Length: 168
Image (tube, rainbow, N blue to C red; front, side, top):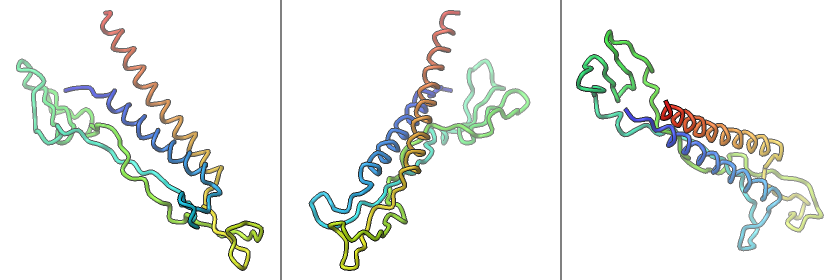
């Protein structure tokens, strides 16, 4: 049985960095009404979805931890550890991390505002703008930043515990 806590924490940090980059892009384009080539077209808010990554070893079946302990078995399919009297310790909660599933455009990505002085306003004075709420984006940025910090703290604490264990 291998501990891949650094992979799990690292994958969480990578996913949260992508989320922060996406939020930064949304904030930077909060008033964008033109495409990069100069053509008329509103920037559409982007969102990020994550998915859990399970270890490849989950499909390998039962294995003993050592040849002298046949009563201690690990079932990678379910993540259960069976010791002596078939006691399940972790109830199948063995994961390999998280990754970005998709960066997608938000459903309600455009709002129409009355501003006849805007250069991209139509003949009635309405202009399409990105439907980006700065407060929501900042809350998402703080949340992603804290999740990133939590993953970094986990990796640092595991490193410290491993160093302490080696000194025993």
